[in-house]
Image 1 (cartoon, rainbow, N blue to C red):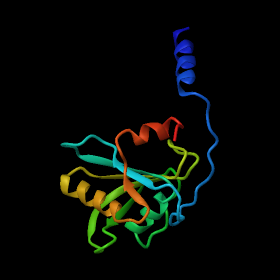
Image 2 (image 1 turned 135 degrees about the horizontal axis):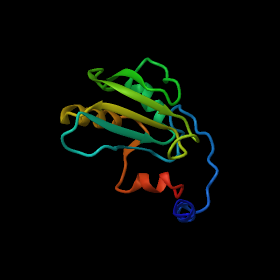
Image 3 (image 1 turned 180 degrees about the vertical axis):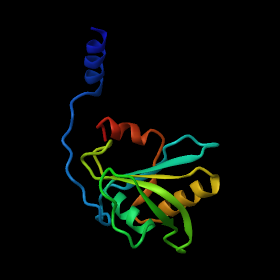
Image 4 (image 1 turned 90 degrees about the horizontal axis):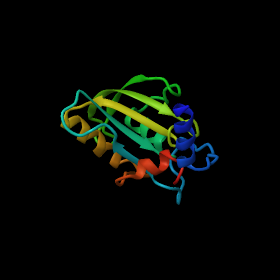
Length: 151
């Protein structure tokens, strides 16, 4: 009984679902919403850090950081060498996951970079993502609205 009640309460709290459209994984179109990126795992000591991107330029960012590789199969983990797009310097060997929208947790194209958790690696990958046109750092709470369909 309680399980059913909590399920109904959770569905009511989420509100009505919105239909999402498929977004391309190429370079962002002028005037389109910016793709956001952020460290998803907690800051501090960790073995693996997770960095996520969400938005129409996610696939483009993944291609730039793993050039000249194609996108990995959807929803399958793949090991890739990440490189700084400006210098070509290797940043890390990372596990990457590609989630094309609308079958992703935000309804948009998403990429997860599972990198080594050292501060130099995490900082390097975040700076590399910041140099990709169409990407910007996420603001506090930006992912929560997307995940609940309120963007």
